Structure formats: structure tokens, C-alpha cells
Length: 330
Image (tube, rainbow, N blue to C red):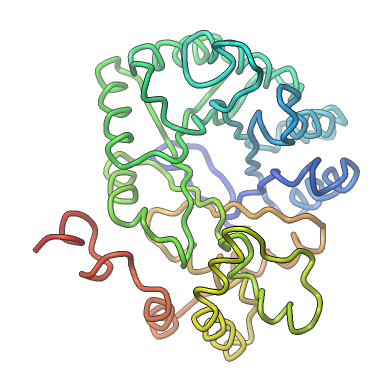
């Protein structure tokens, strides 16, 4: 496994990040523990979760599963860079969500308890809070850092100008600020290339793509449908996207077949070739799926293949892959 620094920080993380959103709803606790053990065997040290995962309000099901895994010992906690998030509603009462100083304090303490640890490596804002001033947010975060409860801070689902706001506010306080941004990013969803990626690069944030396979549509969905091996069918937005982009996805799967590679690994490898990307989040539901994902970390795509992928999934602007403002101006 290769490692890289998370943004401009000195923190070393694996080039693939283990996403845990399936732990609880889709994957049993025993299987979740087995996946995390196997991840360590493969050298993955970067795990991502959130206080709302498990989707039972206020329970933090997934964090609890990870906490009981840490409690087994064997240096599980020490070998893991654990990233969790706050923002989503953990109750029906006022101040049970978003980024007020009060909720930051309560949410951090609750996550620490569920995770059965005394510190969080990377604490991420799951969404921007347009109603809470940055001075309040950074003051609350600085207290957590002074208390030794959190080491690094990150954002998720921020616009480029939100990153700039956050970093400039942190600068005035002499605070390190953000070291990462977690955004949806994949071949089919490249909007972050306009402003988020340039902002992250300017401010030294590592980018952690979520949904790297666009809900499974880049994971060989058509082949699996033909073979009858699809573990779950496309529904909702995924089903609509599949019908809309069926020809493109079919051409993508044919290109992957010519390369002799699994489409999922090609999609992940493409992200690893993008400047500024630290580690795509993989969300295996089984140990086998985890094992199969490791190929992506060693897969090298040449310029010709990268060019063909750009033709199939072009950048989201008339002027090609240029960032803003050139993407939509002269």
C-alpha cells in the first residue's frame, strides 16, 4: 500500500480510504470487524465514518461498531487514522445538529464515547453551516484541539469559496484550519474540478472523493446485470442516470474489458491519477469486495487511456478541463 500526506499536514494516510457507511445497515458487525481487520492486513490505515451513519437517529450505529472493534485491542486504534463527521441531526431538539459551538462540543464528546477512544484524528464538517459564524466554529474547534480530543479538521461538501472563507478565518486566528475536503468526485461527476479542486490545492487541502463509482454505475453495472450477479439493482437517481448514460457506461465497460481490468478499479485508479486527490473512499460490504479494490492502488493508466476516459466523460464545461473562470469565460 502506498501512503501520502493528507494535504499539507504531516499525517500519512493510505491512498485508499475505507468507508464504513455500510457497517450496520448493509454489513453485520462481525463482517464489519472482519473487513477492518483485512484492511489493516492490506496496509489501509485511513477509515472514514460519521456520527449519523447507521441511520438510526441519535444512535451512531456505525461509530459504535468501530468502537467495539477498537476495544478488541491489538493496536487497532493506534494503527488507524479515524475520520468522523458532524452536522447531521442526532436528535429532534434544538442544537442537535449543525455547527454551533454547543453542538460541536456535544457531538465530539458523543463520537469519542461511541468510538471508545480519547481522540479523533480527523474531525470533518459534513456540510457547510451558513448560519454559524466562522469565528464561533474555529473557536470551538480550537478548544477541542487544546483538549487533545481532535488533531486535524476537515470539510465535506464545501464549495470552493466556502474553503476560502474557512481558511482565511482560521488564518486570522493563527489556526492550522482545514487539511482536507471530502467531495463527491468520479468520472460521471466532475464539477469539483471547476473551483473546489483549485481552492483545495491553493490552501493545501487533500481531496477525499466520496461515491467514487457513482453509486456503483462505474463498477461494471451492465456486465453484472447481464451475468445476473448484481448484488443490488440501481434505483432512484442511479436508475435514472443509468438509463440516461447507458451507451456511455457500455462504452466504458468495453474499454475496461480491453484493458483486462475491472471497471471499478479503473474508476478508482482514474481518481488516483488526478492532481490533489489523496484517497478515494471505498465502501466494501464484504471482505472479498475489499480485496478486489486493492488492484486500483497499483493500476497505472497511460495518457492514451486517460484521454479516452476524458472523451467518454468530459469535464463539466464547454471549455474542457480548464478550472474556473476559464471553464466558463474566455
